[in-house]
Image (cartoon, rainbow, N blue to C red; front, side, top):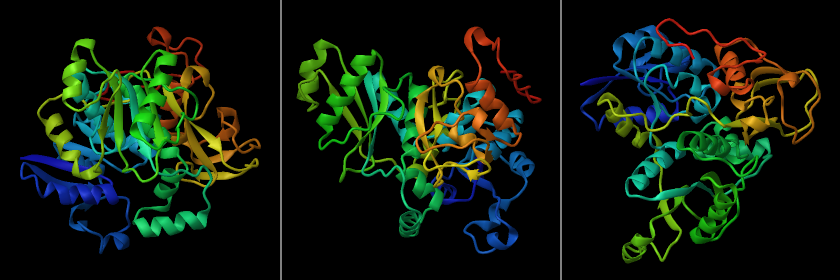
Length: 400
């Protein structure tokens, strides 16, 4: 029986605990939480709670990270991997911010269930059948780039998720993070900063619009559509060899040359165990942000921000939202995931991309990694001319 530790005690973690009951080969041994003793007293599964990462590591064969946090998670993942344990995540925010630094330092992978992992599973299946991907797509029913706090509070309560999560879903930050992660991990690119996000009525229309954009840029693209009334699905648009046109039409995929492969659900914590078995059996990671990510998610001011403004967090805030962008064209951008406990140094206008000169940030391993990954020329495996010193490796971890 494999011993499973969980980092995080929120919605995803609680759902995973319930799901593990259906998997006798997977034994829950602990849940790392930041909740106080008082807050933990009546919380579900509080008997498994611990505040000690060392204790969780000692008990576990594998650890699942599902906090949605970036800065603290970066420190924790480093400690877990230094101990030689595999890490399975449901945390796109972490991956697109600092996850690339860990790719060659041990076993780490995103799980199926959230959109990037579901796209990776769909990619694996489709490529195994000979399809040639053009589009990795995400379907959203509604976006509002600058929602009001009262509106978000209403929907957070109604849906039973946090205000931060609700806001990040609504203002598009979450889908930008998801599609940046998918692009890096699946060898795709983006058409433009902020993605296309066309509004479409039918899947076929979506397939044609985004496939045309892939043809234009000469590479597979990662993007999303807005289509009200559709489930929160992921999909691929792909081509196949000409000799397979007849069989694919017989199998009801249409006349080609574009084939739409939708997956009409992603069930988050219900799907995580598939990745746990894969990791424990020595299977390859399903999805990482790759060692050298080409896509990042920059921070965009939502409203006028004056010097001295404090930003406790950016993802899911009413001050800042995220946009996917090309790293090579935006060497001075600040990844949105690193903006925690930041102070604005210079006045910013709505729509302005935040740069390193615009903010003060507290020291952290995550900050050092971001500067190394996104502020330096990474050509030839080094960073000549980089203004920041490379991050030193931790004990037990190979250098970057």
